Length: 514
Image (cartoon, rainbow, N blue to C red; front, side, top):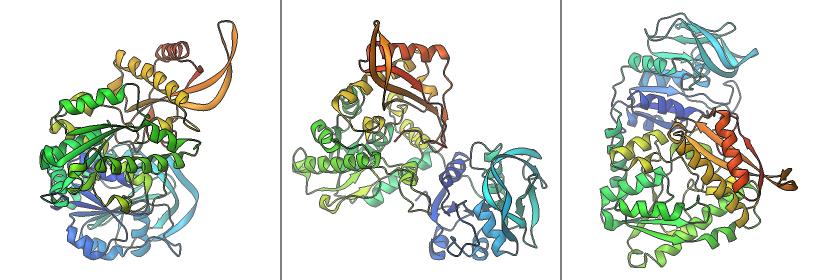
């Protein structure tokens, strides 16, 4: 498999941004994989890493139950980079000293390099810090690599580097150059591109699905499931891949009909299923976002199970797998299975399948980021219309309605969203934005329309730029654009008398509101 040759192994100690390390390195052309810090040395040696990176994490190294790995063994296996908690772990075990600091460092800090690591990295720069503990004594055989005004920020030997800051975060200047410098220090080979990504995904399919097995593919209308369905069809053949596109009533305006036609036009073996009543019934009275996600996830499973027994009954004995377009960010936000990161929100497509389905999962893009999936989609010949679609959550508009979901609220959100997205396209802004949508708030306000008093709903617009979905910045619209969209929505969508714009980045917020 593509996972193999001179790859960089990242050991996750629970950082929320561990995935960004992988993404930055892949962007640079280095294949890497993430394993939990509990991985055995047998597993680590089997991977045969060209370099090892110890991630950040929320713990203190001197806590009784702090995540632990023998770093002396690690640095014997391959050149090592410790980031944040990883740096403190190296210091703690190799003769340095880690203490709680009275001067914590969070956010941007000015850094001075004491050693030249790359001609691309200046002597002074700004980096992103997020730590309370500090290294106040480096290992005896190490040299000071860099420092801030208050603290040691890095040290190194001819076998390892240690950095207190996060080069993987976009806020760190020259972050990719720093990671590149470490990869060169470690002697890593560039072996990751769109072609190797394609080979990797194809091998996952071939190594997972048996030669006679059929696959049920759950389509959402988004780029992830579209790429997965197309990959499966190209690798296994159209007759063995049975795609199901469900109208759950939570899609955008006219989306079911339009996308179903696109799927058939590109040659997918797809069945459209109308399950609006089932989903609305499952959501009735639910306001908590986690309960809504779980109800939707369960209903999807029920619908797919029913489809096997009804629409796909001739193949029910042959269908052994359910394919999903699960991505790395879905996994990291849902479960702490890799390292120990805090769960942000659950995703309906993460966590396995109920026993009653008697199916196994195949998820060929589970270890990819959104931008990698888009590049893959172009490589396998999908249209830009499909590849460039904004991300759309599996639970659909249910999590863009704060509170309970009703047909009237869905009507409001669909109409408003259609206006917002149409204006983005008309103004040539759609492709500049990672994700844009409307959120219906559980708030009513007084307004004036036609000389009469109104007491109606508040709608929030949300638009962000991002490269991976792990971090995001709000899009700085021209005021005239927002004014025009607000006027169109309040004039054309019955039930809205106030429009606001969300100017919160991720973090501290998430992209979606729920």
